[in-house]
Amino acid sequence: MITTTKELTELCARFAKHPFVTVDTEFIREKTYYPQVCLIQLASPEEAVCVDPLSKDLDLKPLFDLFQNKQVIKVFHACRQDIEIFYHLSHQIPVPVFDTQVGAMVCGYGDNVSYQQLVNDFVGISLDKTMRVTDWSNRPLSEDQIQYALHDVTELRTVYTKMMERICAQNRLDWLTEEMADLVDPSTYEPDVDTLWKKVKVPLKKPLTLHIFAKLYAWRERAAQQKDRPKKHFMKDEALVELAIAAPTSAEQFSSLRSFPAGYGKSDQAKEIITIITKAIHDDPTTFEQPVQTKPLTTKQHNLAEILHLVLNICADNYGVAPKLVASVSDIHNFIQTGDAAFLTGWRKKVFGDAATALQQGKLSIVYDPILGKTILR
Image 1: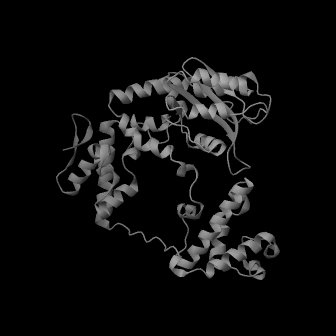
Image 2: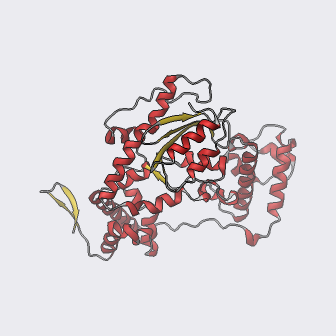
Image 3: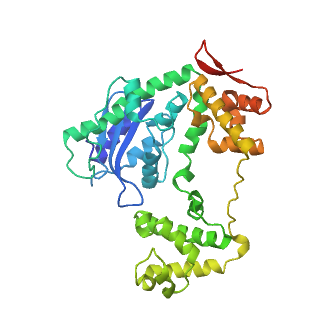
């Protein structure tokens, strides 16, 4: 276990000599807004270690410097939360990055393939997950816990090297570029607080009501960040919706709201909410967000979408790639309604875009071949 800055500096100097390093973290997030890292596992092709970020004698700067070394690929599995941790600690994103979950999609796995399955398929062993619910913040960690944690990076070395061999043999390395770019984009880990509400589905149709909800949602997000507490500890989404609809501008008006206890209207938090709502009501209406008016597919368009999904699955199966990596439901709907979609360019065009266009133009048929025992396109 690495517990001092000196040890970490020496380790990172050794790791910098290798083409890649595998990385994983153990963290807790139940009581905080940001994930709290409790253990960092690292492995080069020659050694594997655990780093104790809770040690008072440890400065993680040598590790952050290694993460900025562009000659060393940082390999993760399902890395978004890991990268979020390092970005929050250092305000930098590890580069370059390879995510074996994304790589697995290029190799034909589904979009949520587990690390255990990849280890089973690429390494040929079954991982022991009996310590999955361990509280990694407790010290000292036992030797069994450390060895258990190391498996998450030691086996990842083999998964990565074999996966890269397969991807390169199929000339699909460029397929990963777009997906990896999203993973190293700072906006992925530091989104605009004022627009986060757009990711929430709410039954609000009036522009003013939606405007109030947006302001309250941003208020809650900032409060949670500042106090480093889960945002739902401040207020649940349902309560924000109720506030947006009722729009209370006095303490007395809180008494009729189901989401708030008696006397809440006199609290400091209620006063903040009243101020936010009152200001929102008097904002310039031309600045209000308009409710998204999604145009539903017609019956004929819905039928075409169903056929396109079938074509997508056939194309993805032919190329041995996960369908979701090629096109989403919204991509297909957008293609039907506007004639535009991301799968009409780049490698996706060859895999699916050309077939989708041919189908729409009546130049493609779908048949079942009894000899091959599968559905084919022609």
